[in-house]
Length: 203
Image (cartoon, rainbow, N blue to C red; front, side, top):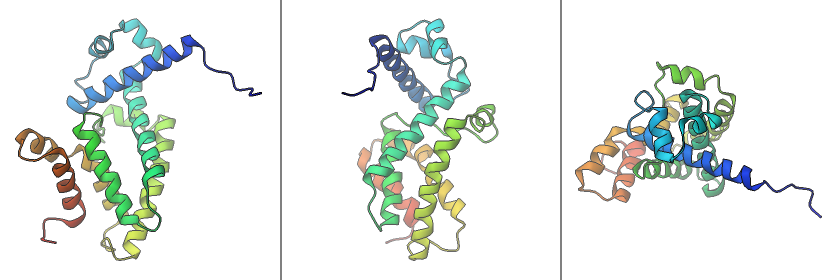
């Protein structure tokens, strides 16, 4: 007989409401960014009072940190389930393609500016820092392996490649291509992956 206690109905409702809150924050951070996002519009979007919202998250900074942490956790799940053995470059391309698709579907919050107060807050938010370090370690290993195999420029510092990969889902080029309407979402994904890893030279 299992000793694991099932969550109560009240606890499940709390968790579902929290997930809905973070979904709304994802959308607002993707569409307007941290500075313009307000607690009022989040509570209105979810359909709860601001007092109820504060029972889950007591500040806008904590909301942003929680949704960015959830993003990194989702990315880690993708990394752990979709990677191919001995294929570091393919794995890196997969991560970029997945993240750009998430952006196109409105589920990719923008990365915080290094000059913003929210960036400083998140660097003190241990769950975010720990999950980001785990993801960085995995991607960094793939980058090093790809460089050793001659699949990525070995003269480029690994940090340059890593931050380039992290920046791709936040690239405004994706939004301009989407607004232009000439390309399908998958064509946009393929174009971003191609320019990220192959540059603008003909293949």
